Length: 156
Image (cartoon, rainbow, N blue to C red):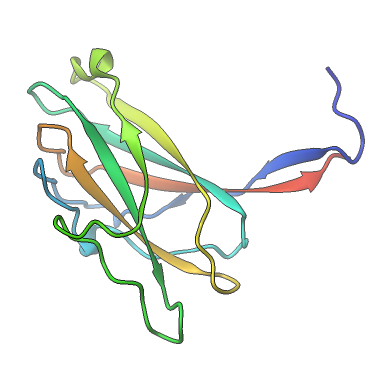
């Protein structure tokens, strides 16, 4: 099926890595450290984003999910939203569902995604991301988190 001229289509921006490149492991029931992620600036002012988590399966039975928390930064001058903790899980944006059939193999990373509609207070809003591990196993170090900005445009 051809898309008509001026129909609304998705436009995908450049994928941005938001992990610092040397992320630490995350124990079951724990939150990732702020030092593991860099602040992502929505410099495209995209209306949506996909987040992709790439992590190596450890040994053990995976039963659960990984929650994604989004913390808007510099929302009033340099004032930030509160950071989430294991007891006060602020800013839950979604969860990475785990395919337990694939989780049984440890020889390849697992990709999952979350659609995000960012809470934006200004142009080029900054965000910090956290992962809460609720998988029943430790997430191995060197996981990767990427953001793909998405918006709408008219088809040519």
